[in-house]
Image (tube, rainbow, N blue to C red; front, side):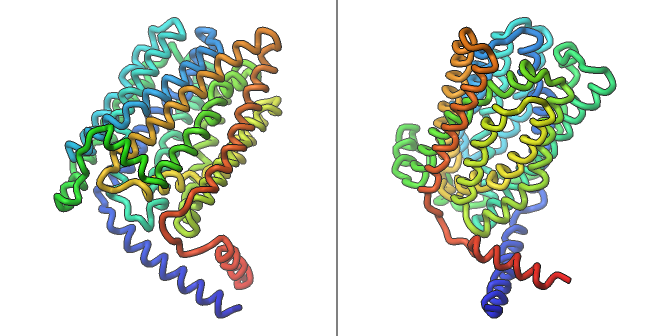
Length: 450
């Protein structure tokens, strides 16, 4: 038994050495560009994004259907045109221009938040924000697909998540805590131009490192370059990719129930529990903290034992979120819910991105990411929209709290049941360890510990 443990330990060390070598194949300039952009755009989004729904509810008395449209339009326009933009980047064999233009332009429509007076105006602004943002989504995924070696995809993807979370935490800390402590529970619409302009400036600075790196596609042979196909043909070929087809099908069903709860969370927070801007900020910061603490752990597990088990774990843990929201009666309880559930969900986050990278052909990364985002985004659109109208209909007869409870219950049940679909996915490559081996290694460390 001890010999087997020692053998497993040596094998693990060998795998780590190999992974370390592969990790170093990512150049310092490329790392700087990826991480700089991640921090810049997450800071910029964090300065404004978490408080848009609050402005709509407090300043314009937005209804459930208004918030449903707000979430739905954001989901749809961030994803629906991804195949077109992805194909364009494949044809031009360029990722960086799409990423740069998207990063610089996405926040500009937020400037008009200062003047709007109705929920429909906010919906239009959010629509434009996400339309500009969608320009670079497929290229961002494809660039990582081309830069990240297969053996450490989850590890490197987790780094991007980590820097995103770090940037979001900085931004929300500034707008939600510092400004609130200095000025009180401020009217964010009145001061919105300050964080918006700051966010646009940071986005522009964050993409400067891209000037110094070369397109990854320029380094490979012509026969290995992305294939230029018509959209119809690309959709047909992606459908023939069985792992991709299955993953997209499961994800689109789950996405409907995932987004079903999104318009309900701000209503529960702001209208029912009367959370302040400071408390909303803390809730968002807790998401970032859990990512910083656990995303790298999840990536190591994913690269060791595989993607599919961790995707299922993340999805089923996410189902508990709306369930626990039903029973929350104070904001401090939401703090606990956000930290505990998000910590568990975070462990599976790198596996989703890594699995998509595993099944998407490197020569057609842009279009595959675009198709995945478009289809799941369409179901995210319908989930939030249906939820918002259902709550408005139910609250007329049953009251707001019961309507929100029913909506959150539907989201929980749908998320829970559809989570099991991901158990039917197959791994696309072998992994060095199993859960049993990891447990054995942990036991061995405990025995050796003084």
